Image (cartoon, rainbow, N blue to C red; front, side, top):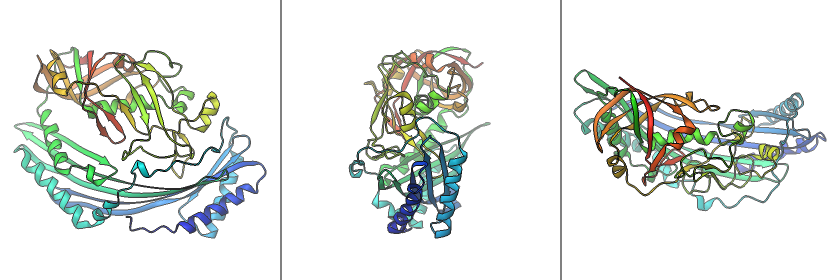
Length: 457
């Protein structure tokens, strides 16, 4: 467990003092307190030599005052002494008074949170990883595996390990009093490869809640293999192609789609999915869900940032937009219940965010999907996803991958641009693989998209 011991009694006393102050103010609806503390350890090697070896602790406590007219005020500190708590009270109350009224702001008053034990959020074995010798052995092994994987590897720019412990406490004037804790561990490798005059830089990494779910040797091998695929890549002739998106690429794309189902984005007029519930927005094979109840996943939690029990929301069902994700405020605005998707740091107000996004897998293997493609590109990297217009859906993205000809992977591809509209792109999906893989909190399989415009030679 974490080497930083938290005096829970002290934190609970501090929270009680802050909430008592809020309860003494007749113009306030109430308040909540969020305490958060995290500890991280990291090590990275550059060509086998230590480049960075750090550990750190961060966190603090915040008071959010909520007025009866929907105004909110927030203040936070990394100290819990008497003076700091008095400052928190004064500043959060003053900030609340100075803010503008907002519709739908409230505090959760529902059932007590379900037991989070079955969700497996804390890995006790990570205490072993806090040992510097253990981290060094992992990084040295990844460096050696990557270096010996292929003679064209000229540098292992990074072999890195990182893990962390987190603990939080949420309390409110409506009766919430909940401690939560979690862990995460990640490792990754970045390499430089050369073949004649051609150079390529590539990387691969994974992050999990449990150390045992990481396969460091496989990650090192994948970093080299993925980089080798695009080494010496050239553009394909401009035209329309069938694209086969590997799971990591489809995951990055689904992250963008998932954000468009956040009710806060819809209300701000920043979502392509605004007003489209019940409409076809993707191919019939597409089913996209947000599920916070999956054991061991990074987005998993028993309750959201407002204390609302989490669940599963089917966003796209059979290609049809089915539901938005909500926190308390935006649910009140739309006259629905919160889906348990409130997100918040201890220094920010509640918003709406995804938990675990899952694109339902199909039945075919990635190999069989590729064999069915006559002329296409197996896409292993998309660049510029942040430039997708979230309102219109238009995009133009750089890409790398491998040319597919008559069902066979051929030459490396680079220097191409994929241009389309996101909704049209989703409707062009013709096949989904059975190889569901999680990247962070998003799980997706291989996806095949037909008739996409590619600008190359």
